[in-house]
Image (cartoon, rainbow, N blue to C red):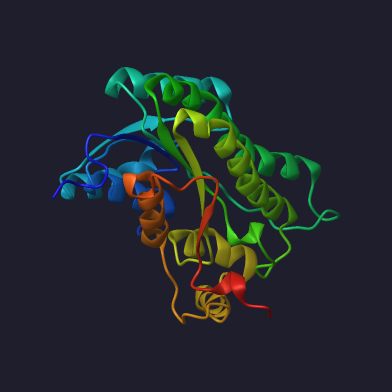
Length: 266
């Protein structure tokens, strides 16, 4: 049986991780490589990709690192050009970079607001801006953008910039999907919920629970109807489906990966 991404080339941004374990980007790189893709693993910090690349090696896959700040257009252009030169094509782009900043419109500094837009939304736009012409020329491709359930509903803290940008990623993807459908380019979104990724220990517990990881995990778990927390591998599996030919008739839509949290009314 052939692998699901056999002979495909994928770019995955945010391929590193803030700690050991399964972040969304790391899991996506490894899962894609397991399924036969040649992956350009992209991050701005080479050290955070070491575990990602080692897991790919252990799985017998192919992934190569590339350093890039995805908020800078010239670096995105260089990333796309390198991938095309190195592998000959770009079949899949996964825009995974993102991060949250706490605060409503009064508390949030305008500079932080702008950084959230650049980090969470402009990065997605720039990836599409430079990858789409390559996909048009080669006759097709698949783009998977990462949003968040914060773009769908209140998720427990005031983070207006993060919520606004993640909602925008969903609508951006829909518009681009319709425009590029005649070119056989599919554009979809994965919407992860409150997963247990290394980000919980490295950053979120300090921001929202005074450093108490167990308290934050219990708070997040209480919102999930399935009664357990997923991790980056669940995000990666959704991205894999949308990137694969199994999803050949799917574009302009989302897969929500949150254990049922976003459909609760409380």
